[in-house]
Image (cartoon, rainbow, N blue to C red):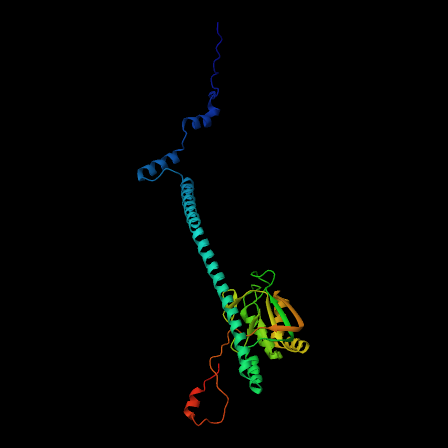
Length: 311
């Protein structure tokens, strides 16, 4: 006999056993919110992608990265292909420069030999006051080598040449590379002339009134001949007074400023004996004989025609 419990009349109805699991039941039975479902239906109707915006952004980013990688890879491949050509052209250029320099040195040696021969012939042909005057003119023009006491200045680039030496612009607006420029050497040479130098040379290149100190890129040219640092400047004159007078000039103070503020290396010293070569750029283009008693067989017009201008 089973006992059955009956609800008493007037009592509240009992809750269903699964009433507390209504949220779980709803989640299990409806996996997509109605709002999302409606939005997806609208996108399908309009033909738009159903991918979320964040996913589309990631896809676009991935495509951009792939494209950038392809461009970089292509550029690197082209650079590798052109590198041997550039290296070969650079090597050929260096070879041509070296060969040209060797030819120039050989021609310069030949010029010196011929110059010595011409000087010897001049001494034989001239005598007395004429020979002395010719030697004096050649000495003043820089056409003959000289020797004597003087001053030696060694000007070199900074140890960290090519990098910024300190803050602020370099004097006269020069770039702060720590390199000795053509204008620096121009000032030094002009200062030595001003201090009373009788003859000046830079790296065995004799300077005259016709000499030019110029720049071609980072190279310094003296009479179109490239020089490399350190630059050794030799000046003939009284050693002590010449050095003191140079340091008192504007060029001497300028050189001291480069040394103190921009790490340009400078060495100053006096020498009891210096030897300076003749200027290679000087050539005798014309000459004029000294005035002599008129020759009855030569007309004044002919004598005037023989007169030419010296360089």
